[in-house]
Image 1 (cartoon, rainbow, N blue to C red):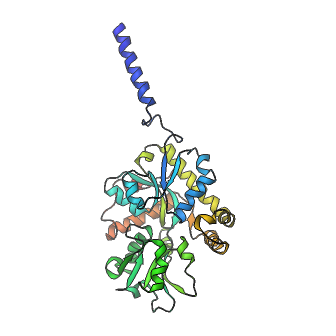
Image 2 (image 1 turned 30 degrees about the vertical axis):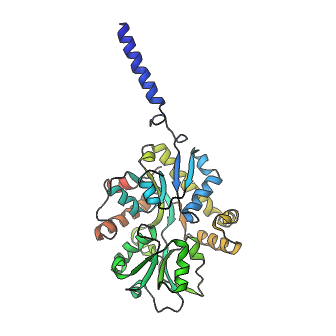
Length: 331
């Protein structure tokens, strides 16, 4: 009898120790997990994180341990666990899942309204006119380039990889390479700061926004960058939901009073008043962010992924787990 009591005591003690371990799922809630979230520094997604932290919106949702991280390559940092949350496009997350990484998109972010720009007076009217020309973009793993790959093929049967001479540049260099004539055209998302510097008297848009036709087809736009998390957070639905709800509230906050928010945070971008007002106007007109994240929006994102996989433009196959594995909607 004493032996039985001792054995039961050891079992209960072991269970108590397990429940108390800092690494156990049971012992970690919304407030206990450190969220390391990456956005684009100086851009729209980094702006969302900054506002969320400084306005206390993450803490309002019970997320007390969130730290902004700006790695050189966010996709690799996310894949290898240096960060556990990031703003990535659906193609990037699908690619990670195909390679065996557990990841999903759980919330909204930056809309995919990219444009192609040239210097004023260039004899180009559409993407088709750029065949064989030097063309600048941010890199093959950027959300805007993913859109161009898929929608160029889908809308115009234009093979972006083969039909352009590619020059990969960091975002701040886009205007410089255009001005110097190093490239004939460049891909620039409407939201980031660089687009506000491309004045209509000197530059012209020849194609875009890309997702208007897609929205007409599916009822929803494409996100250049939406909130994604890895398995560390996916294993804790309460935390994943809190992050999604916080992100939606942050976007609603900036869209509700864009001029006041930009006045307060324009130093984040290094904007003067005029430029801050340009950015606020773009937000007000719905060109940069949307807080909408529901089944209808997710269906549109999934249609984009299916199209990409079918055309083998960015993805060679659909990711494991299908729509439900790639996207989560928390009520």
